[in-house]
Image (cartoon, rainbow, N blue to C red; front, top):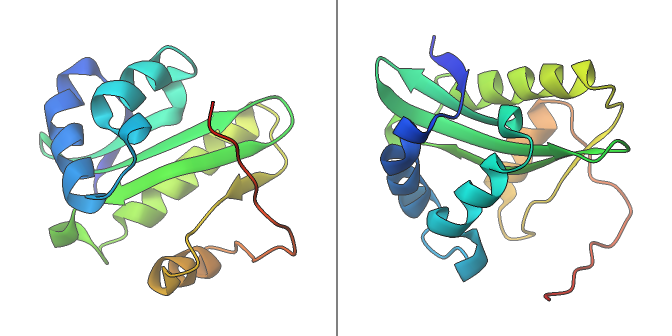
Length: 137
């Protein structure tokens, strides 16, 4: 089983490479050079890595605003999938959020990504009858 740890700056290169492999079409504001410094400036303990030895095999970014928790970015190396790493990252993050007083967690999945939606359903997450809206600043 992989070890789950809070992100450390020493993980940057491996996390950046993992994200580029897993999310090749990420928007500019989601690129590691922008997203990682922004995340570690706030709630660093909700940015976790899964380590196999010294290799980063997965990551998860989460947030908590005092009202709801959010899971933003779960990435598991293609070669390490279906080994429980994603589930371990999610469960560890859920526990950290619960410790902060969080009682509800939200996440978003692209409609076209049915395989990922199935993963989340297997962990107890449900599709809610809401519309997700956003605005770029």
